[in-house]
Length: 123
Image (tube, rainbow, N blue to C red; front, side, top):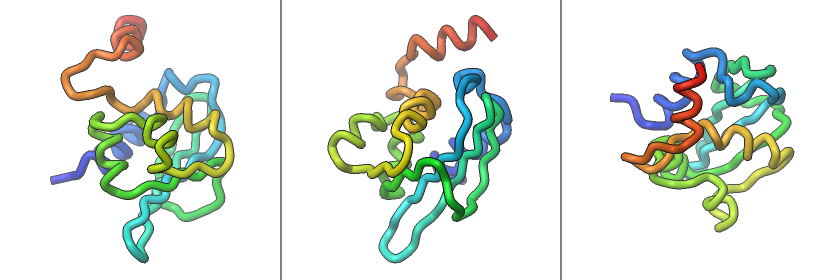
């Protein structure tokens, strides 16, 4: 059984193109720290085209979080910007890229976020 984090990234990679990121280009690496180990997820975004890998290479923006927090983000139980403001996540590089990518995360379980409803009707 896959965890919410792996499902989130695999689904994003499988789609290959994300209309919500049409005006976005850059690289974003998520570093999930657990003790001495760090799991990396790299997003390479080119005007909506998204590639996902688990490379540990330089990125325009790096987000650091615990695996538990990211699991909650990927499941919609936590909001990324709130976690960032609380200091539960760190960001180095372009915060703008984080805000744009944050739109891809699900809302709370059972909610229907307006951008997702709009997204389904238009595309």
